[in-house]
Image (cartoon, rainbow, N blue to C red; front, side, top):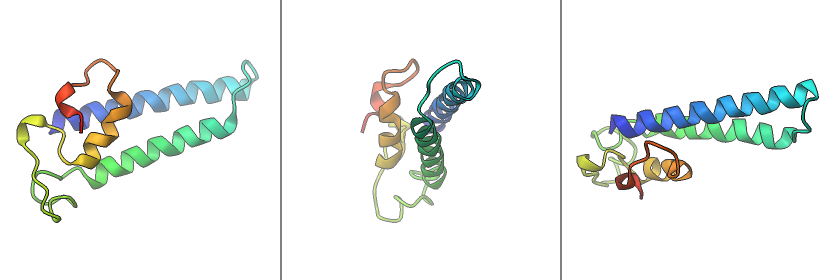
Length: 102
């Protein structure tokens, strides 16, 4: 399960770096960025990171989805459905494994 979580953390970090570049360009006046979109992007990254933290133990017996009785085969490495859904926006990026799809 750690490979999938590591993959998700890397993708969130990449998104944050891209957003920082866009924000810096917009603040310096070199581009006409939409600050609402940039702010929303940062908030979405924060949301994904928080959800990943909340569900970090799913499939190991002490996660929130374990308490409702979901079972997660260890070979898929993704953990619960929430974690699998978090990975969907990154399914076209290198390193994403098809078995992680919900």
